[in-house]
Length: 492
Image 1 (tube, one colour):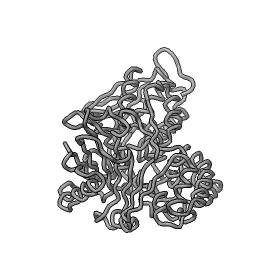
Image 2 (cartoon, rainbow, N blue to C red):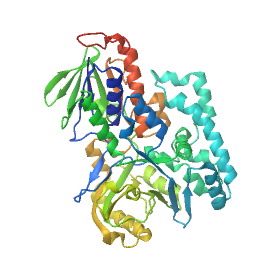
Image 3 (cartoon, rainbow, N blue to C red):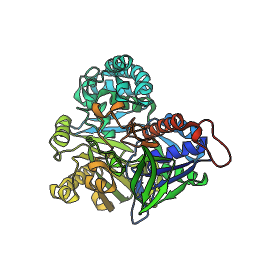
Image 4 (cartoon, rainbow, N blue to C red):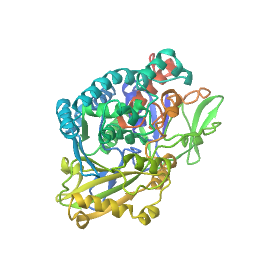
């Protein structure tokens, strides 16, 4: 049984890991247009050999991630997770500084001390704990075979109970009076490229789970997970074809049968596409790309710096008018004068990323899509961001050894839909059953999909849930046809 994967992002890597663990006789080939695996889960390398994560940095759902790797037979000792506590610091333009802590009661005391709303926080945690128990299993940890699945009376009632008709920010008004607290517990929709003032409250379960399970860090960088999975897959006999862009998915008689790579046709029993929709749709015979709304763009600055950086591992630096900033970016399509800024300082807990005496720093700012570096430089945004860092870390600019910049247009050239950093936008009409599924087209057999644009959502463990749904769907549909030359496989 031969399976061809288009793209070596985390969705493909984990799906292949599951498949090879459960069905070791499968013949799997993964095609990747770049020279290394990982997709968004990648790294930036500096001239001095320092490395820093290029994309995802915050490890959420650590227990889920560990159980997923165990399920696929991945050696547990290969992945070391470090807890980050405080989770992060929030700095507001008005001078307020607020910490989030893993311990729930300590967090309630911090909220009470800063805002006098400790009871509101306790109510928030109790309510979201109930909603998560319902929402995760019902809407995220399951697949859909048709859009109509979502209109089952039971699911509609649950959506109403979860107040999915409210936005993430609007929902916080039920718990908090202070706007700074409402922002602190709704900004996390930005993790998946969604405007907190427009993204459904169902995605507001992200900050709850972040608070409940904490924030973690992969020793060696989150990107190291991709390279470790690649190494394990090679041990299991999976073939990787690097610098090999798939030109076409050939469909004949209603079935995906071949991949065309560098003009050569390769025949497969099943094909899995892992990339942003609708970009993947452009590769598939007989498929007309649908209209999707991309997620937000991001401006990313990567630094290697002499000496240590006196910042927390994670920090959010927020404008007074957060709502206005989101309006400027998401609705007006313009750069904000005082944008929200996230900084990631992994050298504080991991000395392996940079040579002795140096550190690395990652800065992310939500910005409009279709933004080139020339526009960013002309606007003075980079200088503005560096000056804000300098206000916290004196002489920062003088200690910078090297800076790299990544704009939304760089992301688009890499293969992200319209430069959106997180797949398609997490809006209600692009969620759950309305999102591309593990089997994206009912009329094309043996064609499957996984990735940040595919249900359930973006984020590493969540994309890996998509891999689990993919493997389950393949097992249901292909069953006994999984075989090799010597024996049949009865349960695949």
